[in-house]
Length: 594
Image (cartoon, rainbow, N blue to C red; front, side, top):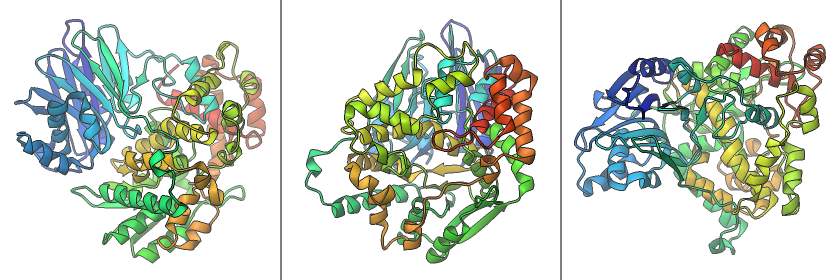
């Protein structure tokens, strides 16, 4: 797990090594264990290293494979790198390290851009061919690892974080109005390739971009999950599905133990992370460290789930760390989490993950997390209303239960000029739902949430907040083979038992019943959900800052009304609407964007 950066020139000029150095240094938190720069005329690459696999200097990056004429920078982990190494050695390749980075380079030499089909893991990487000048950019199937792009005439810059590109300089930081509408409609999700800034884009998940020396390029989408019934499984019983699901998850969890350093687990006390712990214990994992977090209660909301996480830790004999976060850490944690965000993310979970990662990183470098199960297996409460909805009515039904607010309300919040005449959010969902490969309204929603919402909210949140402290998070529920299996499960089995029914039933006898039968929990940060005191003051400061007034995103009268009743206005799913507005302004101000 690391941070990468680079520049490709297409105008005959040499790459700006100074800019790449600045972009690389900006990502020190992602890779505190080492750094490297490499330049060759029109190309410059930079890398910050978090040593997880092959801790020796041989695993350093940028990695130059002189016999193959390739240089690579890579962020992520390839869980089947040992198996691929053996396969590639049998084909005549010789290795100088034990790193998964070198395996990617050899795989590219053997299979070209199809090398991604052989990789099991999370990754973003860039490979440059010395002789031809051709470059390959790639991102993993579920977008677990980020890759941001700044393309200008004559050059392309790329990095693992958006702030790194800003550090390189000369970025168009004007607001993208379409992205703004997405942010205000999809809980801060801005679907790829857009970001909130006009000058920065992101490579979509499951995408390879091949770039020629003259700057021309083509994108290839190499994986698309099918959310429909598999004819080969039409006769499966409920038990068949449960057995297959738990077996696939067992494999996914075991894959993510591949490491040259210890691997812990973020244990929230919910069924997802508890099941990860249980399966690791079942596999004979000893001395497993688990970590859970809690906050002070506020506004009548509990701030921790220690009761359940401690129950699981005791049941499976883990070395458990209960991390209570005192109120004096919360306000600095808000500012720290905003500084760590590559894009503005409204979820209060960001602060929780940021502070949790700070403490966890003092004990381990790698953790597994239960992230992704709700999106893949129908765990949220906006899925049941879609059951039985006719396919042609799916977009309207999804919009009612998922969009933050009707577009008419959005028009009242945004100042004139920011909202286009086209309903960008509805247009996006119409196109997503119309694509083949999703048989029902529920299937269409799950596919969208798995391939879009999950990527640019929960997954990005975990990556940004853990990597801010040099902590690698692995997500077994996003193993692509597990996702493929889950996508084929009949929706009624997923929606059973209040959501994730097939997983809950498969977990009986593995996870304590108390965890399975409990009310669904979240990563609670009550002080943000119920704004008051210094937290409300921080929100007011951001929304009344001269930079905010000059930018003019929101109607001042609306902002004042919301500030006068800060906990009254909620989005469709119950989030604090005032926090959503303030978070965007705080992020822009943190980046010095005017």
